[in-house]
Length: 146
Image (cartoon, rainbow, N blue to C red; front, side):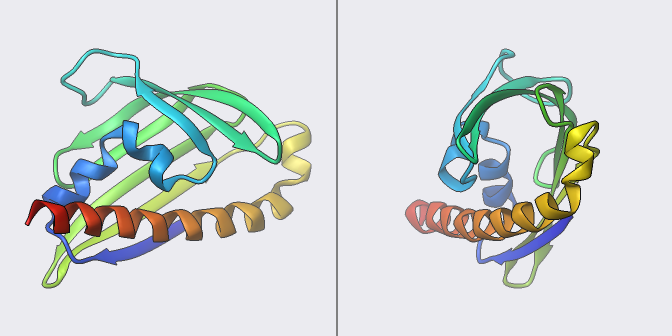
């Protein structure tokens, strides 16, 4: 699943928000908390935990960073948790600021595989809202830095 947004900020500002997992609850509607579990500096192989609440169910995911290219790419995958998922956040410069692209991949197993078509619609709706909140957060960060 792909989502794209344009932001009126330089790539470095957009990437700073994307790669600061402590900000995830501010733009990810199902994320209650997020914290690094590995020491700084953060990059490839760093880990973090997020607590999610979806449809009344609260659970944790432990993620590991797969790729980390400053100002360009932040990708991670679920290492522990109920839903196997991979997320890649890419940032590209544009004349007006930056393009942020989010790719989310999930391979449900068992009973979740049966509900995957319905879940896809629900997830798409959530991610659309999340990307709108991300745009507001990134653009707000740039405005406060000016």
